[in-house]
View 1 (cartoon, helix red, strand yellow):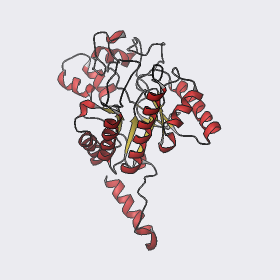
View 2 (cartoon, rainbow, N blue to C red; view 1 turned 90 degrees about the vertical axis):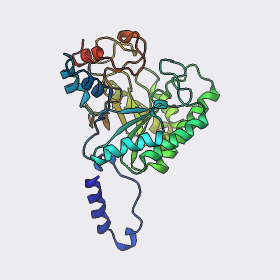
View 3 (tube, rainbow, N blue to C red; view 1 turned 90 degrees about the horizontal axis):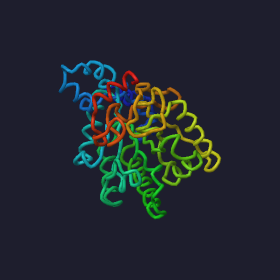
View 4 (cartoon, helix red, strand yellow; view 1 turned 30 degrees about the horizontal axis):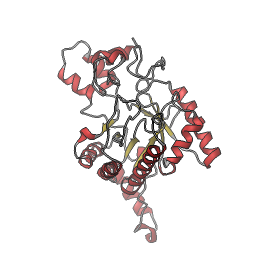
Length: 321
């Protein structure tokens, strides 16, 4: 915050008087308004380490997971959403850090997959929820990943349901542009194993990608960064050829250290990837899904629920076994 205020004051007095009364409300780059990424002080990994200091796995989980900047997910469990996002963005801002937030509450969420089914009660309820989400962030710098899986989850949906979802996503982007001008929003585009690049480009465009800063890849999946970079570039080629524009993209690198074995739900033998950073083949590599948090009642997470922290899975993921 202090660095940003100094920069704004300097820029203000450097402007000609005629323009000083109306500076732009939009940030060129929220990563330059902050100094590094925010580490969630209440992440599942941090809570587990604090509660289990004598556990033999705690040291490795603390060093490799708990102190790596990662996203916080927001949904129906978050309470009054504007208060929740405002508190989180405010805490990061007070430390001059950039927070990463995931909006995960779309109506008919995970409609075809089912492991993370839920979301808002209706499209209108979602519109109200996401407006409050954006309003809570307000002018603070932030990164938001908008509704993971929402554009890949079309397999069992009717055309009317697809159109409704596109409208919800487009409306969400409008709210962020209106209320959170210093937030970069990335519309989720699934992963390289889900939809062809041409298909995903059309889905992104139809859901309002022009309004977003960019798109996100590999959330909660395991494909390597190079595979995602190739896919993101292919999506951009399709966007350019069909619609005349391209967008930057980010990659979830939290669990892609040794790639995918073809399974998406708690596969064994996976490894953590490159920690959160700018660059790295995409605009940013971000830890979006926390390593060790279950994908659902499946694989090595049998008996768990989606989002539950599994220390043994986390520990093995640090070492890749």
